Image (cartoon, rainbow, N blue to C red; front, side, top):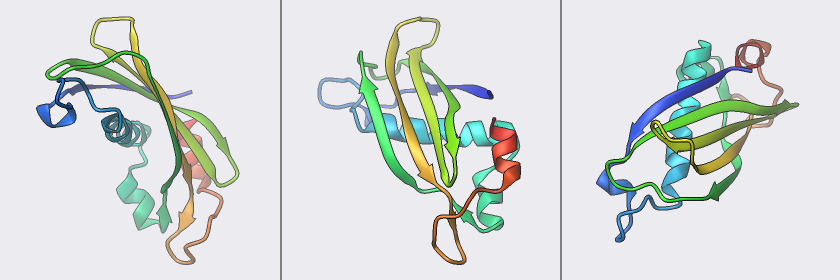
Length: 132
């Protein structure tokens, strides 16, 4: 299974009034990690769209365990958790760089949709090959 770890420095805009990362902002971090995973596999969103595929999020789960704060340097690891039929789940784990404590884990579930029919469609075999 392909795993990608990226670094992310928490900007002030990602924090709430108490200086901790707002719960919903982790979904944006998951999105960045998913993009990096696809890029590392050699199949970017741009290519996906050019070939007639969309990959909307249809479900998301975030298990918030410990806060990250403004200016923390995070390590975000993304990997394919499941791929069946028209669905793809990409999991993420977030830690402060150099620490073992898991701050957040979760996943986003996507559905492959054809840009021609706007209907769920099995993904291109090439994409599943490179992600797994």
